[in-house]
Structures are given as C-alpha cells and as structure tokens.
Amino acid sequence: MPSSDEEIARRKRILGKLNYELNYCVRRTDLRSLGWSDFFGTDAWNEEYAQTGDALTVTKQAFSYLCKDKDDNWNGNLDVVGAIVSVLKSELSRLPTRRQLEGLKKRLARRPVVDAEIDEWFDSVYLE
Image (cartoon, rainbow, N blue to C red; front, side, top):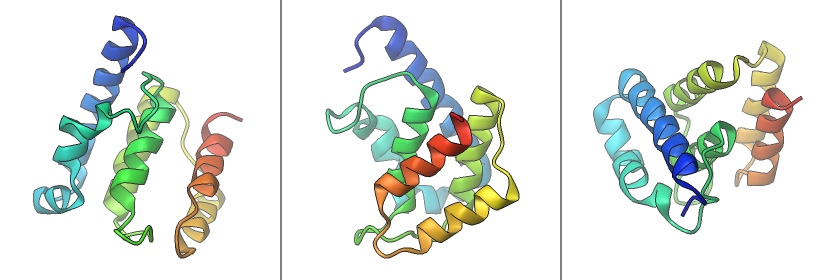
C-alpha cells in the first residue's frame, strides 16, 4: 500500500481523474472488456504495482494494464492512449509532440510490447 495517507489521497485523485477521462473517451463496453473496473476497484492497490501517488507512475501502470492483450501485444485502443495523455497534460502540463507519438506507435507495434521501452517513452516525454 502507499506509504502515507497523503500518497493514498494522491493515488485516489489520479485514479479518479483517469476514471473520468476514460469514461468520457472510451465506450463503456470497451472499458469493461479491458478490465478497467477490476484495475480501478482492486488491482490498482495490488502489491504488484508500486504504490505511489506519482501521476506518471500511476498512469504508466494503467496504460500497461489497459493497452495490452493477454499475449502482451498492444490492443490498438487509441482512446485509452488519449485519456492517459489528457490526464498527464492536466497533472504535468505537458503534451507529447507528433514525433514523440510516432515513437510510441513504433514501440507499441513490437510484438510483444516491451514494458521497459514504453516506460522509457513516458519518461522521455514527461520527465525530460
């Protein structure tokens, strides 16, 4: 679990924003099939995930959960990508450039998706 009440509150706030954006951008049936309610309700608090209120970490966790199929290939859902980018814009005041988005697309085309490459992409866009 997050290390403090403050971390828990931040994590809940980020997940709440992400829930709002996903429900706005993605069809409910798609969210259900992607397992969003499982992640939002319970899996996001599982020990498998770093328990932090850091916006970038939380959204990377959700991205990995929602954007890959059972074989760890990208499921092609651009609406999820848009919702995550929107939350990160709100939290970190940054948007990826067209070139950066093309880089993400190339990384997602690899089969299976390499999580470390996706993490590197997020870090290069939102931390540098």
